[in-house]
Image 1 (cartoon, helix red, strand yellow):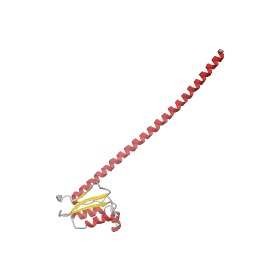
Image 2 (cartoon, one colour):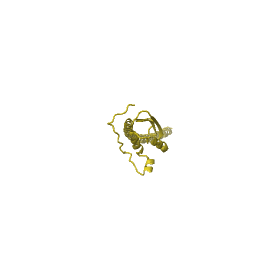
Image 3 (cartoon, helix red, strand yellow):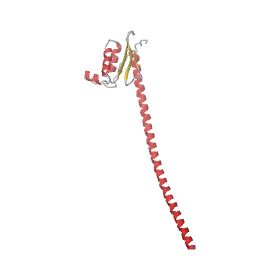
Image 4 (tube, helix red, strand yellow):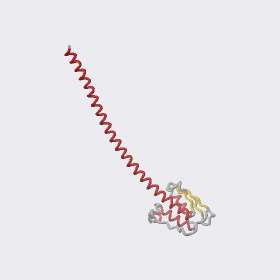
Length: 171
């Protein structure tokens, strides 16, 4: 009887030991999975940080380019007595040009990809004035239609000469 009780107790302890061993093995697997998961999360976090830094650098460069182009548009508008809506750029070219005498207002609203509209605006600017030459130079910069018609190419970095020493007309 004592041997059977001892055998029974031994078997019960063996079953409990196997259960505990299975639980320990399961917990080790869980710990390994967690460690792998943590590594993956850290790698993704590091990649996301690098992407964020790259996007921030790109945003800074884009903002600098935008500020530079906005300054050029402002300078050109002041020099040519023209208002261009910067909210519409670059999809549309919308604004008003004032004749040199100040008696005639010429509104324009053209899609940047609308070559007919740009051509019409170009024709309206053919009226002799000091501003027409400056606008012709501006419109000829990087316009593929003009390149085909005039059989020449103009770089996007062309310099548009504006006489800033002359008095600005009162708007």
